Image (cartoon, rainbow, N blue to C red; front, side, top):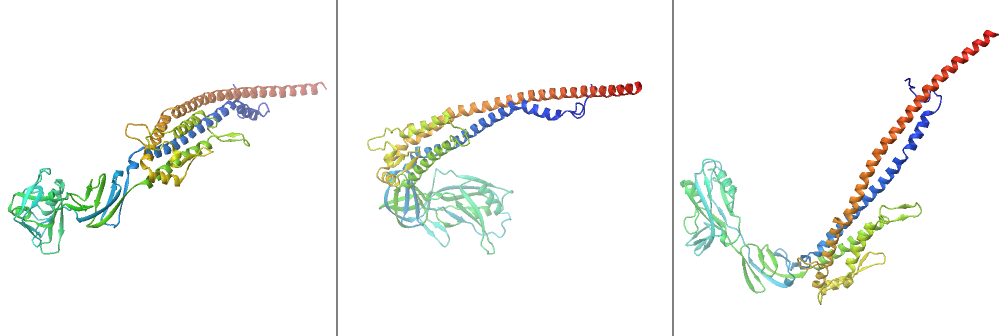
Length: 480
């Protein structure tokens, strides 16, 4: 069949414009589907925004639902640089006088100097064990004991290290000791003398029971370098003694193997820094609790603000927000508010409603905090405030735990069902759009073929017309 290269030329009609208008008309259902899909996409995005706001609220609720928040006690020394303190037991609150007379430290031993750290020393087996040195005397000049006794600590098993031709230099010995994880760190220090390279061994553990005893089974040179028995032959010089921390708390002497002293004050950890005497004020961390309550109120108000922006209607433009009239959002707001207005069971001295701590609902549905009333509640009945928001493990009491549970239920329930429903609808609309697009394309193609046929027909008719006209004209001239 003959075809026309440019539609409408044969018929001398504006068929291209007509075809475009027909295509626009046929595409109207596609435009409607696009608008519908856009609406559902906006709704899905709005649900995501709500989930984000709920996540912030849940995080704030979790913090308030954790009993340890209310058990935190802050320690403030009167003199800085001696110690720090922290506690999770409110019973530790009070004032203390602490005198640190000795800091716990690890033993350090230094070998005789070697001219070359890369030269071979000797081979053998090094055995290191730990224990306490008692009795005898210590000579600071030589760094050695005389008449002392070494008592091994069975809780710290001995460790053996093999020194052979692959590691029998000072550097090799250093590496072998460090690689063995034997409770000792080794380093080489250069003292600038003729034989400057000294092996320095330091116990990784503080306390009197961390003193080292080193036995060497091997070459004489290796024995001379490292053999060290505080109760016998000592080839090393002690530059720092293994010692316990010693302190006095309110007149009571306390000894600790480390500078982290636990339970000297019930529920409290003291971290010793230096010797000295200081006062220590242990106070309940009401500031942290107040911050957590204010953060919860901000998170709740942010959720309300987000919900409001997603449910507005502009009468001037007649435009509704993505979740205007949405039942899922309305229900979740109702559930959370009902939970926050329901009184807690509590005990005789416990707080039971939020207004008792100065947190109350406003006319616009938001929460407001009366700081003065909150401060008074925290100072006068911190335990009651704690029970208002949290409860013992296994219990569901407290606004913090309850809001946390509600948000989890909403995310896994109503909100998930709504989001999944919208997602499914969007997928179906996409399928409908694709199917409709095929129909539109088929219709337009059909119109194009029909117009092409019309063009061909009109072209033929016009040619016939021209021929007949010419024939009639010729006949007329011949008759005349």
